[in-house]
Amino acid sequence: MTMIKGASVSTMVDINQEETAPNTVNNMSSKKDLLSSALKRTSEWIFSQEIPSDVTIHVGGASFSLHKFPLVSKCGYIRKLVSECSDADLSVIELPEVPGGAEAFELAAKFCYGINFEISTENIATLRCVAEYLEMSEDYAVGNLVGRTDSYLNEVALHSLAGAVSVLHMSEKLIPIAERVKLVSRCIDAIAYMACKENQFSMSSRAESVNEGSISSSVSQSKTFVDWWADDLTVLRIDIFQRVLIAMMARGFRQYALGPILMLYAQKSLRGLEIFGKGRKKIEPEQEHEKRVILETIVSLLPREKNAMSVSFLSMLLRSAIYLETTVACRLDLEKRMGMQLGQAVLDDLLIPSYSFTGDTLFDVDTVQRILMNFLDFEMDGNRLGCNADDEYVSPPPSDMERVGKLMENYLAEIATDRKVSVTRFINLAELIPEQSRVTEDGIYRAIDIYLKAHPALSDMERKKVCSLMDCQKLSREACAHAAQNERLPVQTVVQVLYYEQQRLRNVMSGNLMGGDSPTLTSKVNLYSTDIHPVSDELSSLRRENEDLKIELVKMKMKLKEIEISALKSSVSSPMQNTLPSADKPPLPRKSFINSMSRKLGRLYPFVRADGTPGNTKGQTKSSRNRRHSIS
Image (cartoon, rainbow, N blue to C red; front, top):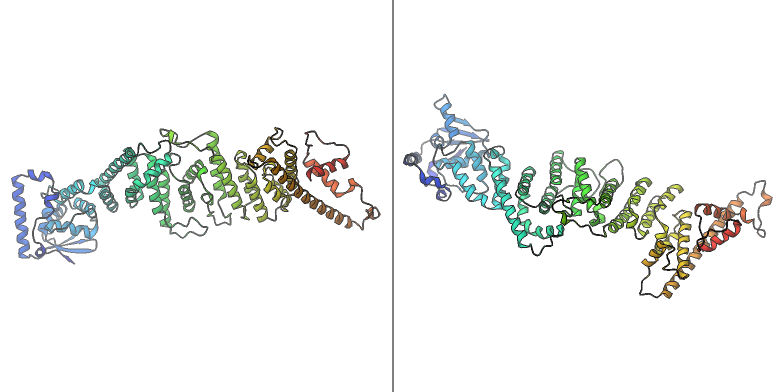
């Protein structure tokens, strides 16, 4: 039971009355002055006599023993209840829907009794709403609570951005009555006005120093400026936060400058999501729905200009969208934004976990494939997201294609270790990497080697399909040396690598390093030769590597010979046993396993001589010997 007694009142005059009273009070009529003084004397007499309470008011589970006269004199709502009641001795009043509950009503009761209390940005929203609910307007008393709260809002609370945000945050709990008294709209308009004013000041102060041709530099330099007040906006509810940003843009706030504000809000509101690992969701359904709405709203507010948001932030939003199972449109929008800025991404931005629990791949390969396709579409069409009034802010770097090619090669190598990545999925992603973005094939070869090592059960046909992704002519010397000894590669691929390496060495040693017969070869050799080293050193190094390759080819021939002998021994019991070759009588060349293998390879790879003329098709034995000599 809460008692408000008159003995605790020292004066009926509020110490803040002179500060917050509206100017219209100075023009009061003499009649109202007399009425006010009469009420004051009556109230003082009631308190001095300590008249017992005559009404009990129940509000939000609390009970207040009060007097009818002070309440009726200022509260129009209670006056109507008393006048309309048929019972003259009304002693109990129920107020179940008071905005702000018992605490708000207690402040209103103190105001009716003339008890001093402090009005602040923390309670002004509650006071304004409870005053509206109790109808404490000027129609019932001069300087009533409605006028007092309006004066404080206009003269104090809404004069600073922090104060307006605080009042707006408190108003969120008082809707719909806060909307009815236009408290929410007044706060939003005040915040938008002050935010645009501060933004214009910051832009004018650095107009001479900021390069207007780069939106990313503008955002980075303005971020430190908006942080001090943007952090205040993060306490707002997402629907109110959205209305604030829309009002700011309506007043001329630049959309790309919303980036830092959205980043701060997203980092605070989406905190706690397990978006960096694969596992069961550890979030309640209600909380998941709330965060899903927040994320979809943030994505709808993202600036349309390129480079307004970092790729890492977009990747975080995409992980969250997949985790929270947002709408398809939301996820596709984020994928397009990442594709547009893929040249700025790093490997960690693409390592998006697969949140499906059906035993799928470790990483979400399909999402990355769509991101890469978006990048290729933007590069092909020359389409730039946000090419409107801010057209001058987008200028794609010329090296984006090469960076994306290197990035995707590293991504292929990363997912190659996952045994659940199928051959089809691996090939489809690798085929999307543009050839012009790959200066060498070393990255693709590395990814293929890792994939073959992690998938030892692949068939010969599948291994050939995987190895067909790389161009052996663009392998570096180090990669060629490794591939020549790689037992995981198909024999055809190894022979192809050795042939192209031998062809390159022959051209270098014959002095045709800068010749125009093989542009691919010339550009490749230039990658590993500089003007600092003399040509003689280069030739010496190439000769040494040539000898190493010869040794490797001899080893392969020995292995083929062993296979041939094993095959011949296995047919000892056949009727043609007496025709088997002995140690001193070797088999005919065209009956040998080596020659049959050479004929098959000749059909697969129709090599040509160094002079560009086709080899002699007559005399199969001589032709095979010449081919072996050119390879070794």
